[in-house]
Amino acid sequence: MSETRYYCYLDSGGSVESTNLQLYSLRKACDDWKDLSENYKQCGDNTDKLKEKLAFVVSCLGLSLSQLLGQNAVNIKKELDAPRELLAAFLNESSYGKDKKRLLNKKFDTFIGYYDACRHFGRVKDDTKWQRIDSLTFDLVADFTQTTLDIWNAVIGHHRSEDMDFKDIKDILG
Image (tube, rainbow, N blue to C red; front, top):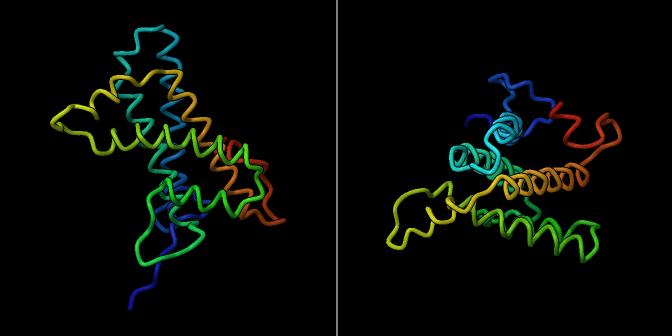
């Protein structure tokens, strides 16, 4: 029987031996978000040119969160729950107040609809996925990026040990 690998090392440098898949996805999203922000300054409100990059950032953010929540699931079952249920279960175990939990769940619910449209991209009878991607805006993705960082900080904070020398995920991202 082969050794089971656990791909979630916070100190991963991206080497093959210790790739942190969710952190790699988050880093890629943040790097592309920085580039996108520079392009946005040049394009102004004409973000149609940036739609693919907006969708890519959403895809990377969603991939990082799906993996982060899946690998830190509160209750492990035979099948893994959808990200919405994983976040709700995690927040129910957290020390956050009701208002903070409700806000994070609401923001994530909006985000996950866009993420699903991006990751299941393709023609459907009513074009709802394409319409959702067409409605992506710079400000919406900015909010999704912040929501992703908030969720990362919640999960890290929950599993934080005394010897961790970083304040939050932005310290890890650099």
